[in-house]
Length: 129
Image 1 (spheres, rainbow, N blue to C red):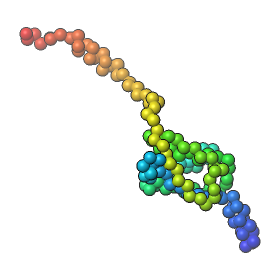
Image 2 (cartoon, rainbow, N blue to C red):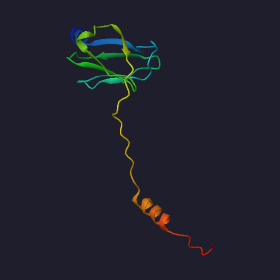
Image 3 (cartoon, rainbow, N blue to C red):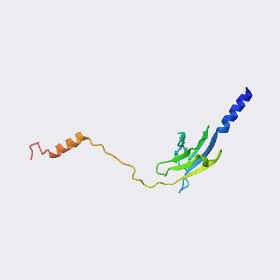
Image 4 (cartoon, helix red, strand yellow):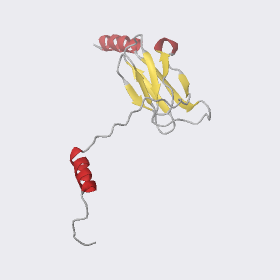
């Protein structure tokens, strides 16, 4: 029984993969808090802590891409094959350029629009001149 448990433990340990890292601003070198760090195919992810640190322990290793994103910064893609077991990586995010990808659409309240139009046409009805 102990031999079976030992073999099962070694089999699962052989496939596990763990690493940690820090996310920093490429310009100021300051840590970036609460950035999204996730594997694209596996769907496993987390956010960095207040000091920009994160760590992963994955039970299976697959060909995947680690994605790091944060508002105002460019998306970073790192192939999982470039990450070594038990390593500590530093990811530097570049500030993104202002993009024209944001659209604000105002919903028109038709009732309010008609009421304002009627009120603008309405003259002085009090009879006082």
